[in-house]
Image 1 (tube, rainbow, N blue to C red):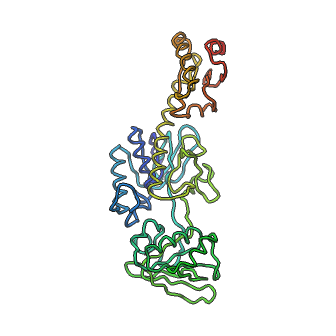
Image 2 (image 1 turned 90 degrees about the vertical axis):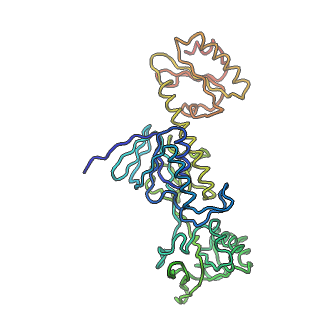
Image 3 (image 1 turned 120 degrees about the horizontal axis):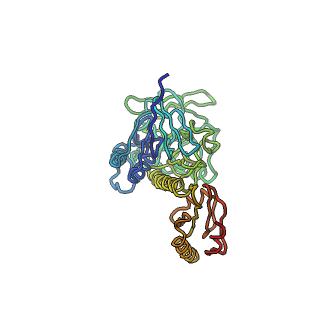
Length: 407
């Protein structure tokens, strides 16, 4: 077997949807060597949406493909590379992370997971012919306006299905709902159930599942099968919305990072996973709302975080891990009065002892990344490091005598 080519990057982004492209824009603009690896189509699921009317800055709306092309071109403007291939495996522990495709091993300081997800489908006959913009949709918010005055079918009876169905009644002429359960039983909450049952535009088809999708160029009819009688029930509709669940594309990250029971990535408000230098954004995350606008927000946060992480890693390596003389770090908050007093003391010590010790002042108001690396969470403080390891942390009585005696 031929040995894989090795490429070194600052940032590898797995996934080229709106979240990944936004992260790429931020990283590229920060002059980080960045590559986006996408297995299918740049822009992700958003490219299949005929009209996006709720993305800010486009009052007349925009086609999903057109909008994603703008994202892609902006990323390229900042020298972000794009590779269309499938990621086979990852190794995320350690300072250098590896992302492997069929032919190449990418080594990176930071990995941003933007692998997205995919709607769960029925797997009924002919379904693949009408997916995305040909009659089967998975986003009421995206495609509601396009179904004004039309007849539509909802598959599912969970909270999302019923709430999205209620939303669609504001646009559609008729909303049929296929429910797998007996009459009156749904998987949604009672409030949503009561509101849906009293909505004159909604009609429930109980004990039914999809048998097949029918049409020529576009969906024209959905054949439902009654589970009690095995009778086929034809429903003529313009669009079928499937709300039977969502599957994150996170299989390759299993046992690599912390995932929920359903396979979504767990992150904090900074889009950080439980592994240093690994961020996750967009629909792969365990999050409340999956839209282009929220994906962009995630990408911006992770892109900014990647820049900070790499900068702090370089500082940690170049300025902190010294062996020839002690390192003194003063962690302070620029807006805190006590911190400013400590800063004055440290400036005085540095002026008198610059040749004997390394002294660095770190403002945690901008970022706590350096403090987090040393497990420090109380400020102001002075940390004394010897041979790259914390020897002592001083929180109280921070003065010239205390610090110099500790060194």
